[in-house]
Length: 215
Ligand code: ADP
Ligand code: NI
Image 1: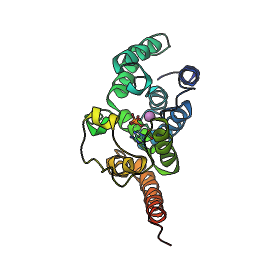
Image 2 (image 1 turned 180 degrees about the vertical axis):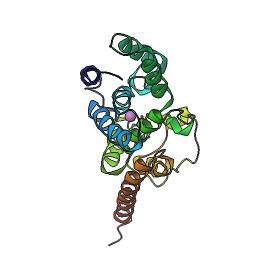
Image 3 (image 1 turned 60 degrees about the vertical axis):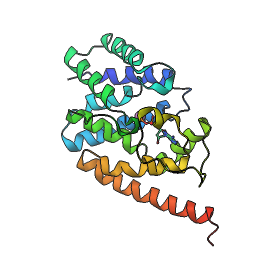
Image 4 (image 1 turned 90 degrees about the vertical axis):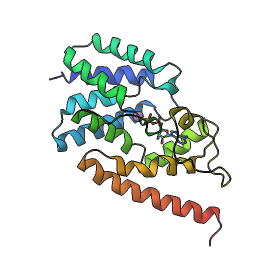
């Protein structure tokens, strides 16, 4: 069992590292995902502390943060080695963090229950009202338009294409966000995803009505 004190240390660590992030991974994203991961873990019989910790740390190796994923993983491994955590748990956390990101859909399935829980929690934070807000924040920050009917929705893409566009905030719903409900691993996350999916559907319908000036 991992000592709960490590959770506080992890929060101190990431709230410093991620404070200035505007790419959709600020520290409060990590906090929400950690709390959601704990809730799902309790329902699904996974280790709640391991899930919460992996969730807090899951975006450290992210290619959008200016360092490579490998460098990020080293930073994470180094931090973990300085905590009071067994080698087995360190291995589990590194395994979860390195396999979980969506990356255009090119990653293999998670091979542990804890990994499936954390991945669900992260995907849920890209859905619903928060998911909508994050998509438009990301778009503004990276110079994408909110919508342009002349930019087509991409049906399949490599990791590079997923990051490099051209796309729009609205296209991102069709390229990723509206697919997430169908990708949930656990039953509890599926039920939450369903409600968030419906909310995004309503949003898109209303957006297109206003875009087309349907009165
Ligand atoms: P992950 O956490 O799986 O690595 P990303 O880093 O791809 O997810 O995305 C972080 C947030 O930014 C998510 O809320 C996602 O929906 C949003 N986002 C990512 N790419 C785009 C994009 N091209 N347009 C709009 N929003 C995006
Ligand atoms: Ni994330």
